[in-house]
Image 1: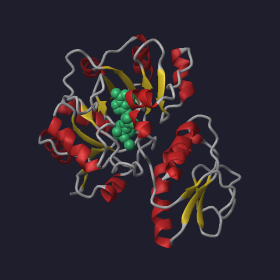
Image 2: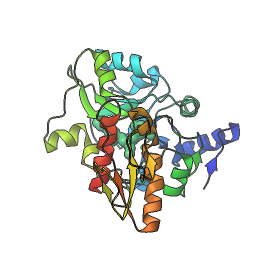
Image 3: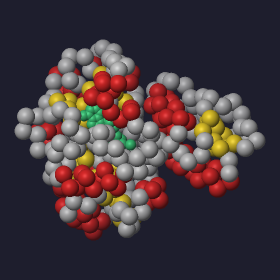
Image 4: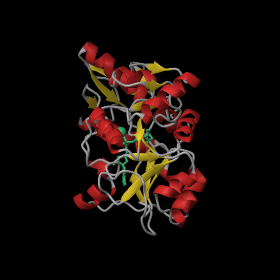
Length: 317
Ligand code: TXA
Ligand code: MG
């Protein structure tokens, strides 16, 4: 299979894959997604199989517009407010499924809620508009591996599928997820939209998920999964590289011997945009040279929370 140019021919190939129920990778502004018809159980099963994903971890439904979103989910006042402020963009809303929701239950892995996102990437929107129905699209990587932020990453990770080339993802980090299930919006996943920006629009702090296995399984099943792991070992909060390490730096004070710098100016949005690309590159280099990886401390502000979440999981391996 191949990397497809984003012209009319490429779009047609992509749409014909989708109509036949074959997974196809598409770009979004966050990361590349492995897309399939959200109303077709076989297409969804093919995605789970391709990702080797545990089926309890449900998928996000991507929509072309607010009408499509309202057909599949119930939006309370807070969900409406967040959608109006941040869609299209890197925010996913988990809401109750609508009464006559056409999305196959396999997509939400049996939950009575549904995660919805209206992506901003022009190609993703074009595919969605022309397909005319919601598309599930988990990140286009095998389960537990790093998310892809370029078409080349996807091709390396999943060589058997077609990938529509939309360049490097501008945000480079999965969407933030907020649960709008009652009047207390829940912070379910730190991602490409900073928590503070969401709270500013809501005019209230986001609730934390209760720390029980049951609540996690029901509300944020993704947190149970091993995630984002590079092949090489990863050490956090490094100040310097040990002999056998490649160091990923951050900020203007990074030591001279670091192999790469996530953001020489110390900007967490820039660091997020480079995170997966750098991890992919450095992981390949480390694996080749028999080395391990180390990364400097990243501040928690802005997208730093999401970066630290991904790095902590990556370090756990
Ligand atoms: O930026 C993104 O969100 C990317 C791009 C491709 O859109 N997609 C992505 O999908 O990151 P994925 O499948 O890798 O992550 C989806 C997350 C999982 O952690 C899953 O548990 C959570 O969304 N999720 C899905 N449905 C949910 C629901 N009903 N309630 C709570 N969380 C849900
Ligand atoms: Mg993922």
